[in-house]
Image 1 (cartoon, rainbow, N blue to C red):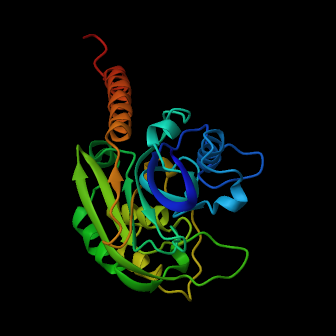
Image 2 (tube, helix red, strand yellow):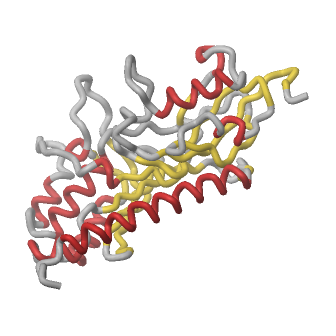
Length: 286
């Protein structure tokens, strides 16, 4: 019997793709979100009787068009989990791939020790260099300035209610992959839109749109600097990490489902990318 005599709390890892269909991850009134999809699946498969008593909690919330590979949530389950049972009624854009039993007092949000985001700059370096003189070294220099404890007021969305904007950043790095700039940000916690705003200003610095002193001014909380964050489609919640004592069990069929979906999307959009790349060529006679 899979029904538990005493319900237990389980932690799950899952992915989702921030398509136009979803209005972010967090539950919203009259909006379709990833949390809503998860809860409907758990209710339909009788893992929970109702949302309130389930203690359902997501470790991190993301805005519309943001994707995730290693997001996490937990809830009190009435049954021993079978991930493919839940995945079977989820859209392909969402999938659970690992889980483990945790204590009843576990909080997926507050027990997380590190959140890792990747930001992929939407324009490849080859196109950036057509419009700008790209300075990658000054970007790397600025990445180091963001590490440590700072007041990130100018790197966060302005809130109606004043809140603490001091955060301690573990690491910020920049790499090049397949001709694209990729930023990695790691911290126990980020402010809303903080990653996208850091990425925006790092790129502006590297393309000469702002100078180094302008960038440093953003770390001065006495300044009040307003601007739009970077495109959300480039942002991935790559992983939510927990204490080493928490050992996640990767379910092979669910992990394969995730990999197969990513591969299919790679083939689909890789072909479309090549189509538009060819259409973009200047030499129309060939």
